[in-house]
Length: 65
Image (cartoon, rainbow, N blue to C red; front, side):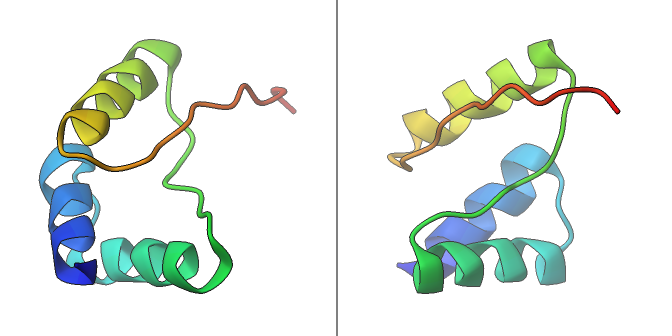
C-alpha cells in the first residue's frame, strides 16, 4: 500500500512525512521517483534496507556539479 511505502521512506531514510508522501505519490503516478542524493555508503544502506522491505529501488550514479 502507498502508506507502507511512505512509512518505509520516513523510517529508513529520515524523510519528513510530507516529503515521503510526495516521493511515494511521484512513484505511484509516474512509475519512478527520486528519494534523494546521498553519499555512496548511505545510498547503499538505504537501497538495501528499502529492498528488504519489498520495495523496488535502484541506485543511479550522478555527476557532481
